[in-house]
Image 1 (tube, rainbow, N blue to C red):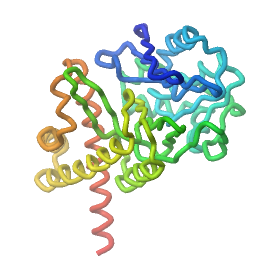
Image 2: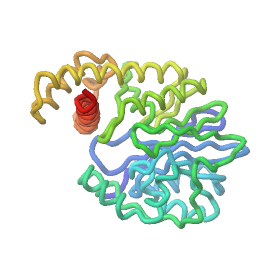
Image 3: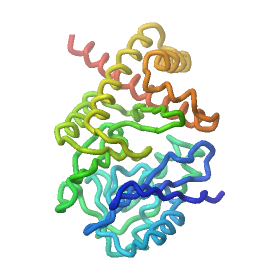
Length: 313
């Protein structure tokens, strides 16, 4: 199957959102690549390999012939799956990522195997990630720029990096998944797949809040003013999810029954999920899958905390 036509949205004089639409039902208007175009020109994430041709066409349409660097928030294949193809087309552009991601980009075989195990047919539709030459990769800790500051933000993944400019915070999935919906509705959910550590995610949110960013640019999906407010809202949301899921775990430890009970309770208790019920069926199906993964992440976290407390008594 071929990817659908990408969309380009001009957000400001120097920022564009390139929407990537992989050939998967419900995945339209979900994956974005950010293009910052100015004295320094860069992109944040590259999307999956299946949408590479569309991304390159969008960059061509925007008259981008040179990238100063490519910033990867993390190496999951919906964010970095096309990196091997993109680097081949921009052979002088360095790729910035977390130290822990470098070996996986040089040899992505284990990354691809993990993606197949976690995502199944969705991973197959995204397409296989290709290797990046080792000399193109730069550890985020060693990256120096007058324009961009990397911020270590583990949580969604342990190798997650956010990037801040004077105007924007490119948060990947460290601030959750945000969707703007019709009728001025909004939807915000955690992106907390197994293995998830709540304390680490909270510290990452606090680190971003301390930087007092202006606008937040989500990997999924779009931009919001008042980044600090959005990060604080998401921080409270994570703590609410911990409380709701912990309560459900006291009632049942049956896997599927627990998962369904948690989802029902979260729909009742978390007003930030209200937009779910305005989505089309294909998008709902996508979100049910990701909500399930996020709940499983919390369940694993709470079991780990419970086991640790038992061992300490």
